[in-house]
Length: 131
Ligand code: CMP
Image (cartoon, rainbow, N blue to C red; front, top):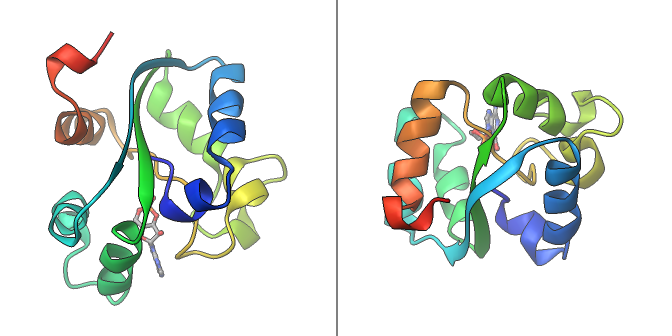
């Protein structure tokens, strides 16, 4: 998911180009604005954490781009591509190093396991929207 900060800054196209250029195939793609309830549901696993309310508020503050990506070893390779959650600790050339401004406004989200990737893909897309 490309987050509201990156979409608002006009970085979505460059980020998608970097994703495709690193060997990921886009299987599904859409731009939407999440309601606060939808953002809360998506990040349910973080309920109760100190950053949760800010996260829900931020993630419903503007348009996001959701995508399902396909590649061998996709989860791990995508996490390498996007870099550390905190852009100050992210490797040079990673998406968060290039486009994130803080741990909270960090440009992009990637699933942390195959299991969660399926749950998150199902959150955004029906079977008719995947190719
Ligand atoms: P994301 O990959 O979308 O998963 C959960 C998000 O919560 C994370 O990126 C950050 O934007 C945010 N987050 C995680 N840990 C912290 C933290 N310690 N402080 C603030 N925000 C955090």
